[in-house]
Image 1 (cartoon, rainbow, N blue to C red):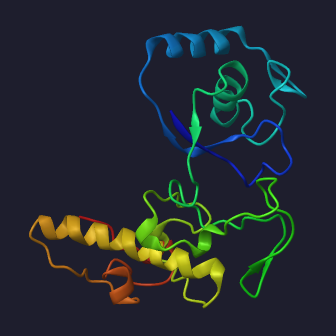
Image 2 (spheres, rainbow, N blue to C red):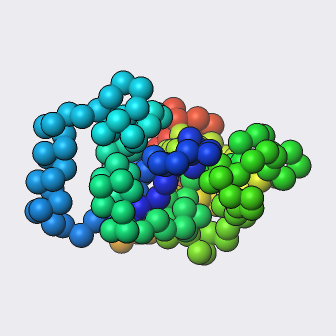
Length: 202
């Protein structure tokens, strides 16, 4: 089983939450029944989380808390954390303070002394993307400022629109849609800035 921790809320935390955007599981009915039993038992405590030891954080009562409770506390060693810059890439700041002149400031959210800035990862190495901080590709946001916070987002959005274009071309449609807003970047899927400018598939 493969998962990503949620480093946006994991600084110095012993039991880290799981990022809800990515999880690969091998189906196992015994595991499923154990999860059902945990939920039915309902041993989630107000100030200390699942089993009284998981801890509290955003999403602790839900998926982001029960998954690490199971794999970090009840069954350690049965899951593998994958590289979040490759799987579930969010283009997030790896440190707990703002980025200045493309350099992240503060402490690593992972608790390590050194941590990779996923925003520098080449797009060719990224397997899956979580469109959260970059926002959704159909919001028609250009991300065209030459800063680390936007460069990768622009590439990821462009790739999403390329895939949509490939799909439509497989139906015999033209490569570019009718939208004129940054047409080459958005493949003609945007008529104006913002979500109201998106030209949906018909």
